[in-house]
Amino acid sequence: MSAVTLALVGAGLRGQAYARHSLVNGTGRVVALAEPDRQRRETVAAEFDVPAANVFESWSDLAAVSRLADAAIIATQDRLHTDPAVHLADLGYHILLEKPMATSDADASRIADAADRNKIMLAVCHVLRYTPYTRTVKAMLDAGRIGRLISVQHFEPVGWWHHAHSFVRGHWNRDDTSAPMLLTKSCHDIDWLIHLFGQPPARVSSFGNLTHFRPSERPAEAADRCLDCPLEPSCPYSAKRLYLDCLADPERHTWPLGAVTDGRTEGDVLSALRTGPYGRCVYACDNNVVDNQVVNMEFPDGATCSFTMSAFTPMEHRRTRIQGTHGYLDGDGRTLRVVDFHTGAEEMIDTLTADGPSAGDGHGGGDEALTAAFLAAVASNNPDLLLSDASTSLATHRVVWAAERARTTGTVVRL
Image (cartoon, rainbow, N blue to C red; front, side, top):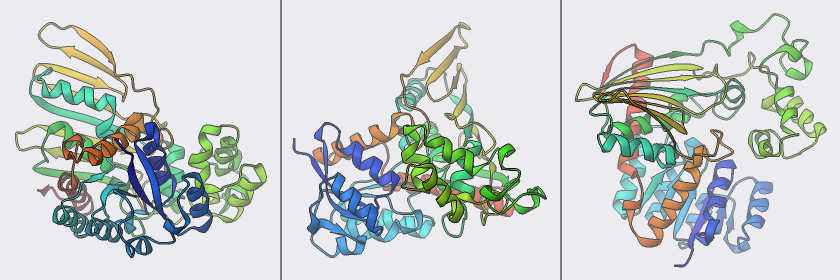
């Protein structure tokens, strides 16, 4: 079977990751590229040996020519997903679309309509559905291993430094230039929970705030930048310590360090922190997204679910407690503790998820498995190989938007 040809639209860290996974076992081949940043465009084009005639500055330039590939990976910034997705779908490209699908219901609906209208496969990158851990949990639930599902408690530990990097200093720190935290970070989790229950909830409530990373929490002696701050050595959110420590760890060069500077010397890092956004004091940024949030869901059959996201944790795998009428599951992203109510027996299951939880190592194997499933689906023209389609992703995104309405209005939203 010949390799699936791919057009990469947006060659940032996520786009590059999916493109590299596509090359494994020769199942995919990048033949076209659209990226506005010149240095990144040239570097990525050279890495994937993309013909010069197929290298474009913008997605619209790519869309202006005849279809160049079987499928497109769209990994632009969140608010720039809609137009390339719609136009490339109209050209017949199958699409692997980085999450979130879009930042509004109207835009996500446009994308879903385009996928349906053109009869193309569109997979939003809800990578948590594809991990070995998730497949094990879902199979146990579907087989009735713990009886009827009654309630789930799910916790996402974002990590103190990760939150400061991405959601205080970074690209996803404002809901007006990116989207709310629940969409940019935790649409993964809401989608995953609905995948477990097999249906959307009937009612949603939510609570959450920006509690700590704001000017009112700033110590009196703090400077606007970490390099100038007398408190920096003792501050848990020191940008200087975080990014200089990355230099000694090659696994952290791509992320998070790659977001700060392309250089790999102490001077490169300090120069970027002196002038760039990642050197700012976490109490003197322009961020407005929440740093903690709780979402409560009630399903049509009376089952319930609570989801908690918090910045104030180590960066670890999600943790989940799943309660059924005949048993109980307690999982950490790799290992499951199973309690059988009939016998009282307990079992520990290692799902063999060897990868860690960070954006740099594949979300517990989900990045690799999703990419492989997408390429196989395109190669065989079999959408059943995908665990969600455009309409499914639209439905789970709508739960996120309902939760945000509930949080901001102090109401219970009925779907």
